[in-house]
Length: 323
Ligand SMILES: NC(=O)c1ccc[n+]([C@@H]2O[C@H](COP(=O)([O-])OP(=O)(O)OC[C@H]3O[C@@H](n4cnc5c(N)ncnc54)[C@H](OP(=O)(O)O)[C@@H]3O)[C@@H](O)[C@H]2O)c1
Image (tube, rainbow, N blue to C red; front, side, top):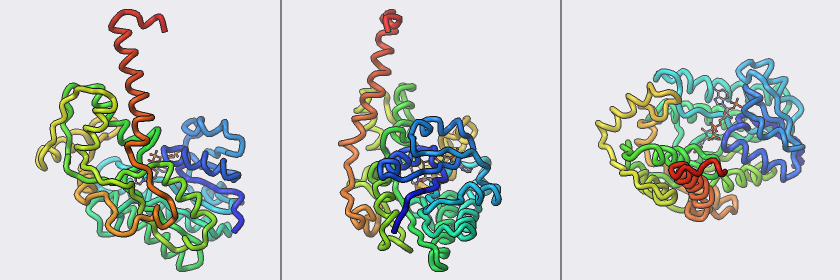
């Protein structure tokens, strides 16, 4: 199968930026659709990448912008919405996916790769997992109707630029005490490099048509273990206090009103299912050996946050201007 050009929705984000670079290395021409060109600034320097600003929720404009590509990759996803009714999730996950499928059909684009999430299901416990599950089922149904579709369902993804370990690192740097909701929730963190490798391999592999792949890292950790590991890497002395169910809910209720919604009740509902692979790990099926967290995280966490700390020490010593 010849894939020379790929259109990526959500290409400006964490996974998208890694994937766009990977596709560029494969020799693909990549068109990134974004709502804000400014957010994709970092991609403009890649010679084979075109960034198109478009309202992806407008069906006509979406179809136009998606035209002429051999394959489409939809990475769009949100972890939180305004309010708690599920409307934002429905719009970003279900409605947009339906429009992407429709545009593929009308444009004659046969190949569609779709990003979902581990344990996404129409009957899932949270608006996030339910909307992801419904979207995923639409994609699979389009597969049965002739599109060449592949769905990926990762656990939490780590790597340079992630918003998971980096967020905890920032919190640990800011505060002497970190109250941690759902400390016993379990994850199998998967390296972003492995996730984009799975996309790159699947793009041209007919065996992946009509299939869903759960993607997990090689080890399972509790949230508490991940935060303590991050603390060790950045050499923080912050005290981490695990919260019980009631306090976790209380914390989420309050955090929903903090700008950027760092935690929500819907996030807690998602965490009621452990984010670990229960069956086959799709990475292994695709011939990819999942990278351990311990070989990657120190490269971007220890370096980044220890530099910040060093600057702080210098500043405290009144010598910051020397730099
Ligand atoms: N990161 C993880 O740990 C993880 C784990 C499991 C699954 N996933 C899934 O993987 C995908 C990529 O995750 P990520 O971490 O790279 O996310 P991200 O950094 O937040 O990027 C998401 C992208 O989606 C677009 N987007 C956000 N809200 C949108 C909306 N309302 N309408 C249209 N576009 C919107 C944004 O593009 P523009 O702003 O440029 O338009 C952004 O580039 C998501 O579908 C996510 O659910 C991620």
